[in-house]
Image (tube, rainbow, N blue to C red):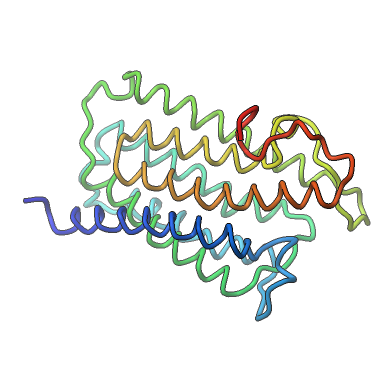
Length: 255
């Protein structure tokens, strides 16, 4: 019989998958309460920078904790180290770098920030504990086609995500407050290039780790980010008469 904690990690994975599908249905109906859409929602708000830092922090803290604790049974294996590092690198950027680069972001509704914090706590625990304690890989896993394809996809997604965020930050000149059509990079093909990059990251991570936990995280990310991308796509078409008609929502040439 599998250890009790491993059964818990599997149960959390199935729960995360269910919550992702539920969020897909709900958010397509009511929209996402953040950024340019946050004014539609009442309640307390958290300034953009601390909101991002606080809500993403658990997904940074969990892998760091597993790296320093002496009982991390599987971190003597290089595949486990590299996979945990892939997860950690994303959240170093998302927790520390991304908030520092925000330029006048809109406050986040408190309830949205709390929900994101809760997700990052559970998902950070699930990914970090699985990779540090239970995941078993062959010694040559890092040279297997599955890992290599996943790693390339993860790296490509991270590059697209960071580059697209940079394009969005630089849309406004100093003193400007309005919105502009993003140009350049993958934005020439989709309305939400930054979200496409993050989806590619977690699909690559799922492929490289070949785990239930990684696969469910990729599914959850797609469900959440697609609904946001669709909302953006509709907003751009309503806001700008000259918005490029050839751009898709999130998958170039397809969707």
